[in-house]
Image (spheres, rainbow, N blue to C red):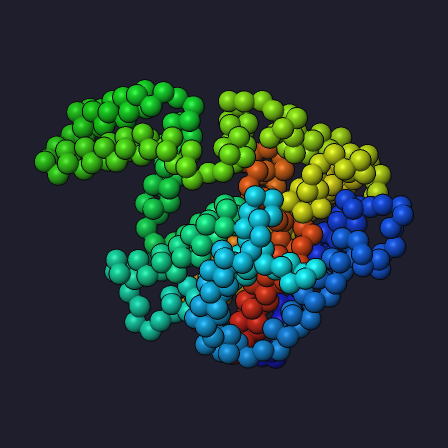
Length: 415
């Protein structure tokens, strides 16, 4: 079969890219700088990043796939070094320390850590005779993910660090027990409950549930059952008690405030909750069909901070309305489903695992970004893939996607 790239994925990528640029143009629109090719503006600079990203995409489609897979550990190690260097040389920008300055150009290594980690993890998971049932194998896979996540967390970039949790999804595809996902969800639930409810009430409820399980639900009881239930209750109780320490010492003050606003413990439409408050007004004012391109009054007045980056979706809602927002969501869902379909047909573990990693990273970004814009999740500041303004994120996402499309291209050739 002829060696061809998957043009459906390329079309969806291009559609999201183009529509994203139009919304960046609208979000930054200024009549005195309305020229499309004015490279002093953000929409002009984004055209430069788009051009560079397209060149990168072309180069990747022409690169031998085995070169990329062979260099996976080298790329990962190089990015880890960059993340360490960032901790020492980066200045503080918007509370974070994740940008390296090269004159007028700013570079964010954490964006590139995502595809580097995906490559290294895929390389490891494709090792011959690897037994994922072994604890040692799971621990090594965990270390590959945790190391960059911790380095990014030390840069006070919680949003980017959180994205690395998405690697659990491809690991499940390879046989990781869903118990870990269940425990993770329970930990999140306990964390939220500990912030909302008296901790003694939570611990008492845990004990009551344990007693109900042991003496009402469980027909046969052994010493092993008692030990397991007691251990789980103790672990959950210790976790509940430690929430305050984690909340006060790990999260930044603005992140704590945003969580409180989301949970309804405080209401601050002029401070911490201002972004989301204005964003929801902008999206709601668009109605079904929107106010029209460049006619968004809230967008024009620049009421929503970061409306060309993290909050770009509110521009879609105001100017293109419900139908425009729905079309954007559909484009992303189609791309995600396409990537999963392509990943599932791969004959190599490397390509399959990497494909699922691509889908997972894009999904986490898509879910959190749109969720925070409409007030469903805390504001943690991560871009909408291929859509938000920014050179580092656009180039990193393009590399992430087209490495996989090149792997799939190799698969098509083999068929």
